[in-house]
Structures are given as structure tokens and as C-alpha cells.
Image 1: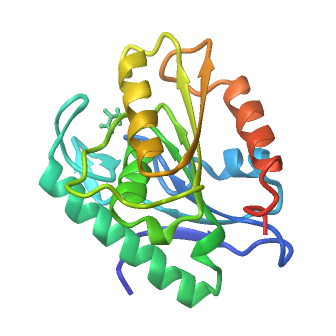
Image 2: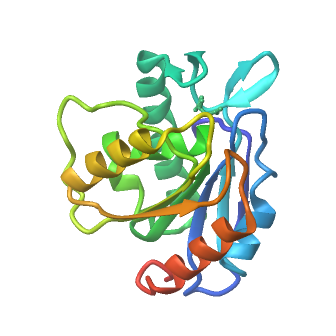
Length: 208
Ligand code: MLT
């Protein structure tokens, strides 16, 4: 099996969702477990640790500078992560059709890349503080795929233009994108969690 250090917790009930947790720079496979419990109590989780180290801090792909990505590395790491998700679904017996990515910052950016390059491994995505990861050569067809982008109105790393660009890119691929603006910077806030929880409960098809 593709090797990612990871945590897997099965869903508490057969109809509970499974969340793919993708941490931010310097995080680990344990970081977002409390967030998952707040978003969807009893959800299953697959939580890998990013394999790239930037001065000792785990990430999901290399960057050349803050917000400037190594696109070749990002593409390769996206494929590797998608293969890991596919293999994990077979091993742990869950469906990728209803798998929801929950990514923060660097994790949100690779979740966006999964939607653009390997959308078959996800049923939807919650992206906290996301940027445009890359522009694909060919736009995927992901009609109706639900995506929540929850970004901060005063985020020094992600501008409003970047957020709108990401939403437009995903919408042009057919995704059903909700953009939620938080009165926040790059850090997650209580209202991110409330927004995401409400967004999830309005999508019972995902919560199976
Ligand atoms: C990234 O590198 O993905 C973004 O700059 C966000 C971050 O991880 O700081």
C-alpha cells in the first residue's frame, strides 16, 4: 500500500460519513481529529501526514516560497495521495463516492488539486483558507460536486481575488461551490466550524 503515516477511524455507524483530513503546514495526522468530531460526530476519518518536510514541518507538497507552489511536485504528490485514498478505501472498506475532504491551508490546497486532477477519489470538499493550487491543462467535469470554501476576510496569505478565482475555477468545472467569508485571518475560528457543520447537515447524501 502507498505509504503515508496515517490515522484511520471507522465511522461509528454505517450511515456516518468518512472525512479525509488534510492538515496545514507543520501539522500532523492528529491535528484535525478534534475538528472532525466537531463537524460530524461519529464520522469515520482517514488522516494522512504530508510527506514533504519544510524545515522539519510536514506538508503535502513543496513550495518555492509562501503561496508559490512547485507545480511539478504538487501534481506528483496529488497523484500519490489519490492512489493512497483509493487503496485505503479498498483496505478499510469505505466509498470514495461520499468521501469528504476537510483541508486546512496547505491541506485545503492539495484537496483542491485532488478535485482538479483526481476528482474520482472525492464526493465533496470543505476547504478552509484555500488558494488556487494549480490550473489544470484540461478542466475536469465534476457536475454538482459540493465544495465549501471557508476563507478569512482579512487573511494576509489568501486574497479575496484568489478565493474568487478558486471558486470560479471549480464552478467552471461544474462544482456546486459555496464561498463563506469569515471575519478572520488565516487561523480557523468558531464560525468556520459552525458554517461547515451547517453546510454538511444540508447535504444528507454526503453524510452516508
Ligand atoms: C501552502 O503552501 O499551501 C500555502 O502557502 C498555505 C500554507 O501552508 O501556508
